[in-house]
Length: 266
Image 1 (cartoon, helix red, strand yellow):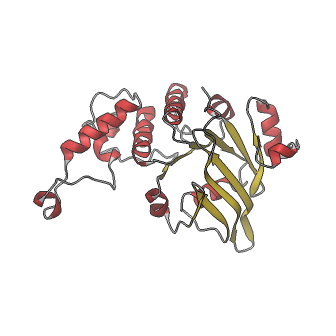
Image 2 (tube, rainbow, N blue to C red; image 1 turned 180 degrees about the vertical axis):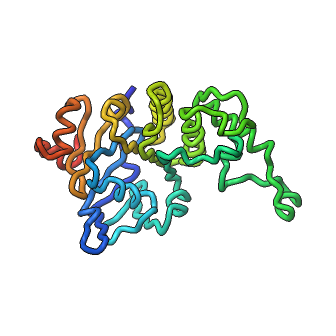
Image 3 (cartoon, rainbow, N blue to C red; image 1 turned 90 degrees about the vertical axis):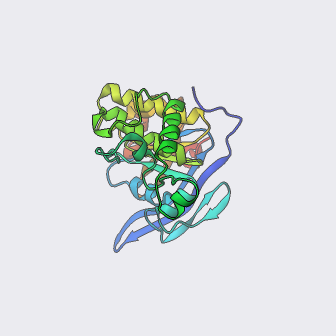
């Protein structure tokens, strides 16, 4: 089910982003708009600059020019921690979990909860019971079928491991969740699990940015498609109005977008 049309304010936007590496311009005056409660797919050929765009939006790089706004207010991210502090979380394609640790520990990696009072503040003891309870709750919210949060991640399938990474971002990503090729290392069944997780996150009201080369997956889940070409936004497409072949042609430059698509879509 697509995101409702009644709650479509812009959550995350960028205007005129530029990033140069010597004589190479990775981002060339790029614009970007993510609306509330939607899945926005970002597609582009290799070298189109989509990865650099996403890095700028998540604090992994600082643009040379342009502005980024969150909920209508201009922001400046010095690093990914700044972006995470505003509620922007990223799921990476390389299954960014630690296999030898259990699920609860992976969910709270870098955000470990400490016991209340003297034990936590002085001896810095971890509140493992609370982390396990809350991690189990997050798994249940997204209906991920894992028996126990105390089992090590190395015992899970690829889809379940990616599910743990998604749970971690959903637990702390209160404004925006970015997914960078989340199904690249997965089989067909496990890919279906991740696509369903994306839908569940959207249905909770959290917008998702999905970077993907897999056009069937893009058309299966995206509400809008941001086409990135030559370092900038070439078009924003409604997948109900364009078929897969047309979107690929827009991505390669074989087809010209409409004026509406050039200006960011309907």
